[in-house]
Length: 437
Image (tube, rainbow, N blue to C red):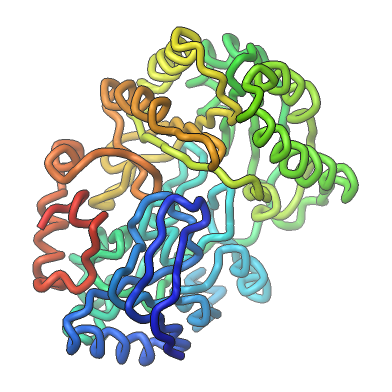
């Protein structure tokens, strides 16, 4: 389906565009025709999933390909654990598609509204020192190149391209199919509990190594860390999910409805933010439950925000975090959103934020109606001083020259881009900044 013009904006309302044309292909062949037509008209073309990236990475001034209708399971094999999906499939739909085969995704981020192609293309990750980001689960892909051709990439065909294509920023072509290496379905035993922040920082390496998945949140203006630790158990383990009412109170009433109201009020009366943060850590983050993996990994996030996240060498997380906390106190800022700290295993994907090193992530947020510039700029300098790499789907100020210094395979990726998209059919302003011309 094609329509002329119309406006598009991302979830965070931090990027928008009025494209020349919007197309909603339902099949890989439909994507191919759209790419060929765009090339014939000298219009640049970009694919859009759920719009959950905070940057302008998906902005399409020419032809916007909305992949919402390109969804579903193509094939799955319980014996090999491999499953192929159409690229626009939303992450939250995948568990039900895998269930008949007894499979699950190995790891997930804490939000599952993204499309599969968008999540891998921007480096979406979860937490767990022994587990990589979602893109590390990719063992195959099919994309449409700028020449309008199908290109299959897996261990049998064009295997040398997989480390680039699995996390490709939308710069190499339009993904139409993605094959994941899945694992047998499992449950997670989760314990969420508050702990003194200084105790958590002093023992952070031990906590990270002791659990399959560990992360913590810190509300500025408090002395408490909200820790989350999870252990992987066989699917046959008895589930003890959160009570429906209790989950609704925590995740809908307190974490979304009340929190949205407080964030809005805090813009007018900043003084209410510190006491509310102290109240929040008393009312939330103290529970234990066992449930299917996807129900534990993910949360409902309805309060709109802006986010910047940096990936650091794992050993630099604590000093960087302390510098962030000191900066907030010294500047006298009132910050309404918690800071999130997570971890990931090293991997070999060329543009992965965890490329070649065990990694910790520090993410900072602001309510979407608040100007994040001063806060984010100050925190970004701290992250860079500690060896940070910015998350590709979240706000940052770096350009290609600076990013080249952070990624050993940056120019290898650019060479693949030159090969697959020599005329820059898939370029936009954001990609010009982060990859250069």
